[in-house]
Amino acid sequence: MTVVEDQQLDAMFSALSDPTRRAIVVRLAAGDATVNELAEPFKLSLPGISKHLKVLERSGLISRGRKAQFRPCHLELQALDAAAGWIEESRRLWSERFDKLDQHLRTLQEPRNGDRHE
Amino acid sequence: MEIAMNENTLRFTRIFEAPRQLVFSCMVEPEHLTHFWGPVGVTTPLDTISVDARAGGAFTTVMVNDADGSTYPTSARYLEVNPPERLSWIEDYSGMTVTITFTELGTRRTQVDIEQTNVPAPMLDPAAQAGFLTSLDRFEAYLARRAGAHR
Image (cartoon, rainbow over all chains, first blue to last red; front, top):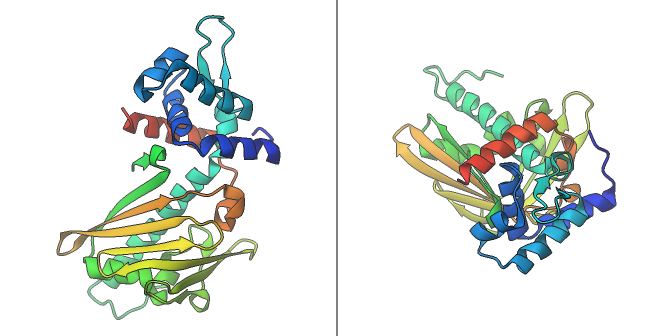
């Protein structure tokens, strides 16, 4: 696992605080894309999308290819893993809570539900 | 499961084979909450759960890690308590809002939708800190699912 400095985490969360940039990250999770490919679904001008990409690139969340004209954007999953661990943690928390709640509800609804199974 | 990041919202859904009123009660009564509030490996002792289930009322718990005894206090304030349909609270530390909607699918079948908004920076949230390091593989799979859901 990549060691991520606090400052870089701050930059990543700051970058992710914008809905368009989050949507770009989600899009890049499906595969690399060029600026043109990214601009289209978001109905943004090229300069507009470039601005968002610069913020994402500075934060370390994405990198950009060196092929001069197209420079495809690539999601840095390891960086994002650190930045977005909380999403997974949140999902896991509710998932495990729900598993336990499901079991608890079954116990409550057993025919002899006066018994307390611990 | 669907996650809509572009609304700054996380959504989780689960269907339970139980009447709606019972599922709702489980979310607001300490005697029920103690059975499931902590995730795997974490217990929430009954005497640490405090519920004042009305708008403006406090909802506090202390989750205890079974392995090392470390504690994760949580503290929230109810925004809406509308049995058996809706429940929502705002977490004091993080400002994150959790809204739970209970939908009756049958007399013994209930859909529960969790919606988290104003998702915080993780370092502010003790519960998120507790398991901050997740495996890359798991996250990649998760991202792939999420990206797929947006097509």
